[in-house]
Image (cartoon, rainbow, N blue to C red; front, side, top):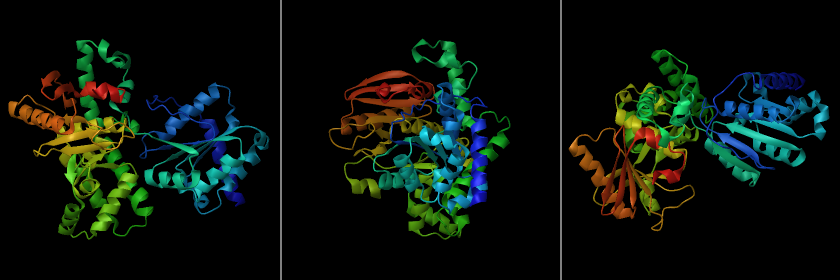
Length: 452
């Protein structure tokens, strides 16, 4: 244990020295850190959680907090692998041996990938009860963190979700970012540039480390490696699953169905056809683990009946379209599915109350969206959003508008949105207004209220 403590000391000192050494692009997510509550940030690997916290550490230093008052530990560090089976108090032992005078001062603890730590929730709870401190936690598993927070923290934490760069954040990395700060003041040239950058975003995606990669092949390999790390480390190894080849193949299938309906029974049948044996229950479990790890999201049908929501096929989306494109080459040329996934992730940054809809007339609508915290009820009409890359063909235009007008009538929604690549129009119908909106404009909206 002494050797482990010494390693932890070295890591603490290394991390303190690294604060502020690199410059990072700011993120749009605004976290409010409340006294007495641990701040928990979850999200997929490599989306920028550690960078986000590093920016906060830098702000702390700028406000006068001493570097010695920050204790930063990444529990995925292989040098402290033994800590995963040991008592977590060795972290405090190491820190306060380095800085014994800090017992009387406020200390800011930053714990990265904390799910690797044995009994971490008990440790953090005890830390908050016995020390003058602020605790900041990150992790790559949604359910693991949420479950343990709910059972052990008793309301003493506040969770936040971070995703890869949104389109607006992607624009902020450009040298001419200021020209896109206010939609209403953009010139025709600005709009053309914005549309060109959206095409680049559709090609490259929003993972921060992908932006400086020049070669397409290198970028694809990076994204494939990211997906492999999620399936092998965050799913197979964490849950000790048998048949890793079948698990990996299932991940490929799920990503290949981005922006499409899927059913676990059909996925099992496809695996059987490839001689990859997996029970229907395990198919559902692995899909759930991938969702816990933020690689995919599943969307239920919009219905007042919970049984209908559970028994109908789900739509599947990827945390970033670039990963699905890299893992499944079949998506590369499907601009419609790529755009729909980009729109989904923009909506997901504002609310998790997202469904797809199928009207009684048989028309399907890509998204039926409620405000955060809202429940499906006759008194809460959803915002209806349809995505169609190109509606210049009259038959396509009629089909998309017919679906929205049918949905507006059935769900009593007086506003709907049809998102295309570059068209803009306002259409008055007997049921309300349909806003035909270019994708770049929708993706630059900052608030839920700006959609209607």
